[in-house]
Amino acid sequence: MNPRVSVLMAARDAAGTIEASLRSLQRQSLSDWEVLVVDDGSQDDTASRVQALVTQDPRIRLLRTSAKGVVAARNLAAEEARGEAVAILDADDLAHRLRLQLQWDQLQRQGGGVVSCFARYFRSEAVGPGLERYQQWLRRQDDGAAVQRARFIEMPYAHSALMLSYGLGESVGWYQDYGWPEDYDLALRLAASGSSHGVVPRILVAWRVREGSASRTEPRYSLSAFTRCRAAALARDYLTAENPWLLWGHGATGKALRQALASHGYSPTAILEVDSRKIGQRIEGIPVINALSWLNEDDADHQLVVSVSGSIARQKIRESLASTGRIEGEGFFFAA
Image (tube, rainbow, N blue to C red):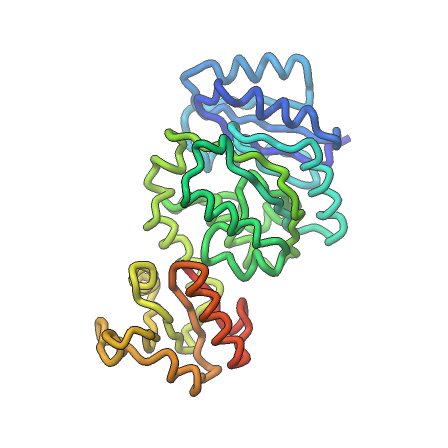
């Protein structure tokens, strides 16, 4: 019989961490799982360490390839998976013993789709202020609606916290290589699929912080790459050629997002600002208008993207827009 859950694990030179990751799966309260480990051209003894566990536990499956990259490795694992659901665990992260069971139960309650959970960074001494803010922000995305609303701000859950129905992964095309974060790209396509999203609001994944990790060193995970990724999704899933749209905010984040959206043929009809020094100017021909005055004249035909940094600024704008009847996630989105 096929397992309930297939866990996908791509690994390259992970000899120092992969055994702990796999043993965290072996301790799961839900025993009906398999894990597909794709050794993506490792130069260390990753494969031999995994093979030693394979001989003890047939639920662990090892696939070896030349160094083709994380996208190809994860897609190979997905192709070989036999489970009704797929979960992700990176080769340096750890799963709480209840992780698969609680997420599986939630997936059944909602009739399939996507289920995430909370994660914590470790070790704590390696977590700086930026990562701590992101960790706390993630824990505020505590249900499916919150995940959907927040998706253009940041990746709304840790990738290693993801579980989804196998058929859904097939329908959206698993991982794609566009030169930007493949995990964020998948999350955005899942959000746009119309599938159910749920969250188990418990810390069920330990997320390892490493100085040399790909997320810190590879260009595909840079700030500009994230901006290109969210701009592509906004152009595909939210903005339409038929309706004009407005951009609220033109600091560093707003400017970068505007430029990325322009490459998809989307330029705002106006930029909303509260800074009196900017109001009345034109930026590449786009008028800068008073955001507070606009609130009193809000034209519901305009789509709205708000690109400001910081939770305090977002909350003030959120409250202002609520007074106009706009609904976050429908009438406007925040986008970093």
